[in-house]
Length: 88
Image 1 (cartoon, helix red, strand yellow):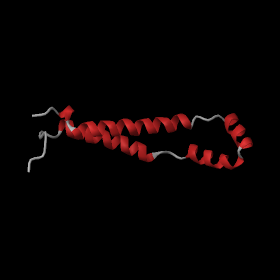
Image 2 (spheres, helix red, strand yellow):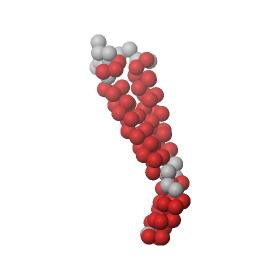
Image 3 (cartoon, rainbow, N blue to C red):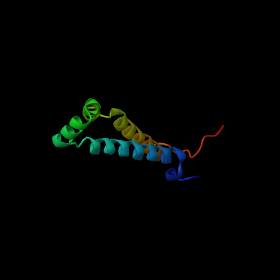
Image 4 (cartoon, one colour):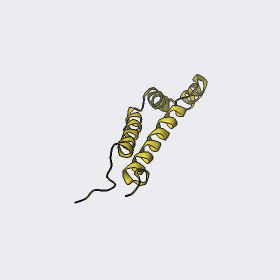
């Protein structure tokens, strides 16, 4: 019987959680724009300022839901299942 940590479901959930958390972190870092930086961009590229403002103000709920869901799938596979593979 294969250990739970070598399961494809567990590995996929771990990769999905890492990807979602890295996306959430990248958006958080991108949202750390100072007013001076925003003013410089708004003066240089006025049409881009609205897009930046929308991007900064929007929260990425999908990344949070994906990360939490992936962790729950990994926990479910690791602790609440005893089968290592499906049998037909």
